Length: 304
Image (cartoon, rainbow, N blue to C red; front, side, top):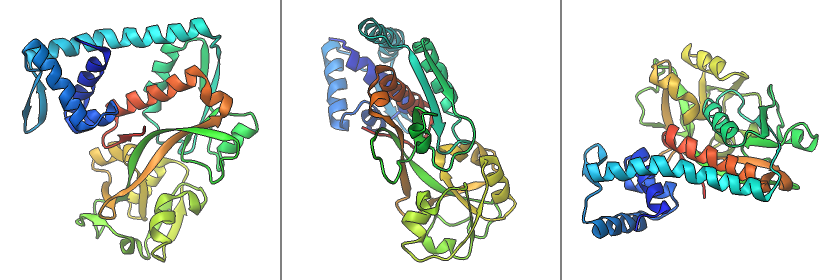
């Protein structure tokens, strides 16, 4: 009765603490996931977890199956990779370029996991800031771009990774610090601190400020830490991914607010040529990003 899908579901429940979030991670509806768990509990006549104000807590029986998941799933994943290696010659190279090159702390564990899984594939980062990172693919200087999508894809293809909220970042002493969220008009006559990229690639400008005809000043900095310093010293307001600012918020260096009543959301992609995107180790790289970020980044929504 115990199947791999059950173990994956239990692992997702353990990592998220909520059925709804776990269902998203294993690409099921919450109802379908609940039915799957109930069927397992009914078959063995046990309870796998209890609900409390903090979420879900595994019973001893649930913990035993969760331990099994931690033992079995890595072996299954390794076997699947080995089968791919036996079918194809999977040596190669992945040169990564990052659109937002200074706020990818989560990429280090991803690359470590990938190197262990695919030791015959050389993976490396293309250093430096690039105003048009996708051009490096056309020039043969990079294989994949991690970021948004270019205005024109051309012959490039992509895989979606996850959706994330873009937050307004303010000094703890800013006059708007007590607002529940910031609306377009709250940026009027403020200095917006951004990376030095074209305005049409900055979500808050493209989707919030320009449609509302909001006048603002703009200042740029290449490094996230420099942007945080400028914000903290009340030189302006920034707009950055929630996962890129969390450590600064946790240390109360800055504060963050949602943009708009429903929040401002964006999506992260891996982009490359058709040949690169279709390679099995690239597919596994995308899966490793999703699984790693799902367990380490709060508030993201995995893409299908």
